Image (cartoon, rainbow, N blue to C red; front, side, top):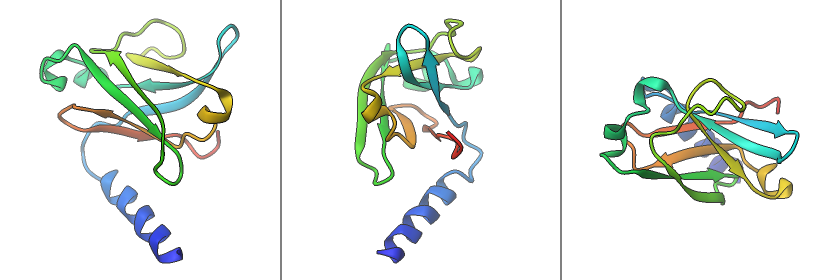
Length: 122
């Protein structure tokens, strides 16, 4: 079991070592809506061509065991709505018991691939 965990950690480390843009993933506690996962994307890749012209992308978030916690479609490119971040972003809502399991998220269908992890201290 330790061997599998070590290999998983190594794979995540290697995947994050490239020069590919990464998502900024964090919790955001909205006074009215409660806890959300905020998925922000760098402005330089927030363009229609990053998703091959598609008008929406799929955002998936996972727990520590790589099980899917959320799997939703969002309009693309993202917008900066002024709520939670100045970067373009999506608000992933859900039940607190589910959102609290999230450790990483990715956007499916972009080139370059976009993914990111929650900071450990959250």
